[in-house]
Image (tube, rainbow, N blue to C red):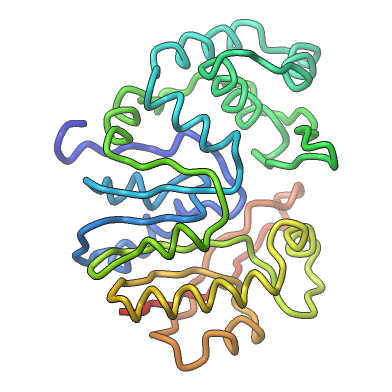
Length: 270
């Protein structure tokens, strides 16, 4: 990747942090030796920082395999994605959604295709682990912002892993920077989307994450964490680091009129 070249995230992701790097870039302006992100998603912060050394992880196996395929064979992924662009239609979408490609690059292209054409870029699977989001309104499969070559170059020095956040954060050492953006769950929550997240990330996971943060900072790592701005989460991190209330626009509601400004909690521990 050329120096000062900006890489745009190629995925749309619920809870993605493009708004953070565009509205609050100063939050991430700090020195570090190695970058660690245990909930990678669309990687907005990773692409913004473009670190020379990194550990990138997520529990979503298909997601990490997509990054790996672009790292290893971005041209093949790009060619396969162009085929999806030419063939895209309602029937084709559901055929691809039900398919199980054999090669890594074809699976990556399928993942990107579904992400760009499904409803609101939502990733959701059924009890059998099968992607089940319906077709959305977007028809552009290949985007002008696509730059898989630069993504591949940036990922060359990245250690990509599938798995739980705890062993990833446990690798952090002195002068490492950990960016943590977990699925948002709260104690006694009444929020529909957060409720869905409970199956992915429980309140017990929130407590376990807090304990991981404390151990990592005791080893000399710096932590930048975003989470739900809810009294139970604020209480969980009480007396830990610096707290700040951030404002962002909600984009998940199907009805544009129901989209509104939301609060998120920022915790910085150095």
